Each structure stands twice: as C-alpha cells, then as structure tokens.
Length: 178
Image (cartoon, rainbow, N blue to C red):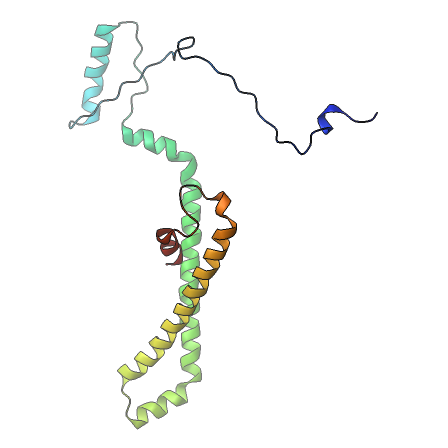
C-alpha cells in the first residue's frame, strides 16, 4: 500500500462543509416579540399573552424573559471563567502588595542604624517616611516600566491573536499594569 487518501493532504487545512439555505425556502418557525416598557415586566406577561392569543389562538406563547434575564443566561458559560480570572488577579495583587511590603520592611530593617543617625542629626519622622516611601515608589516604578516593556513585547508576538484592539492599546495596557 503506497498511501491512503486521508494521509495525502495532512498539511492542508480541513474545511468544514457548509450549506446555504435560502430564507424563503426555510423560514424560521418561531417568532420573537420584544417590548420596551416603563412598567414592571412581570405585570405585562398576561396582557401580552392575551393579545397574541386574540390575534392567533393557536400561537403558543412561551419562554417569556426580560432582557436582563436573557443576558444573564447568555453569560452563564462565561461567568465561571471570568470569576476564576478575577480571583487569580486579586490573589496576584495581594501577593504583589505583600512582596512590596516585605521589600520595604527589609530595607528599613537593614537601614535602622542609618535612620537613627539621620534622626539624631535632625531629620524628623516625616523626612524618614518620605525617604522610605520614595525608595518604594522607585521600585514600583521600575516594576511598572519593565512590565510595560514586557507587555508590549509579548503583545507584538501575540498581535495575530488579538481581535478588536491594537497590540499597543493604551487603555488595555493601563488596566493590565494597574
């Protein structure tokens, strides 16, 4: 056996068959009615059902939901991954805050004698706080700078996977880095 048909074109993309049905040949069998109201939606269900049945007594009226309910149903499959990503993001944020606190605490602990000398010479507590927090802000700034450079580099590689945003979208970068 030299080869089989299924192995001849392994590098070609597999295309799925598709069929075209004309709308006039196969019209949908169900209709939709959308209402906008300032009244509570539950109070209109009976009136809408009666109005439809007066026009066509054989027409079934079912699956009545508000737009909020329809949106919630459509988001059910996406909600769990979004919540999981949110939890991971919050854990990452807490860990980064703990890490920054640990680095600042370690810096202060190693510089205790220097801080004591500064205060003995005449520096007050606000000056020492400004010194320590300024160094902490510098570390955070370096981290943000490196993070933005890394994000821009990765987005350049992932540009073909992005849809609806550019690879250097400022709003997305701002949200990701904060």
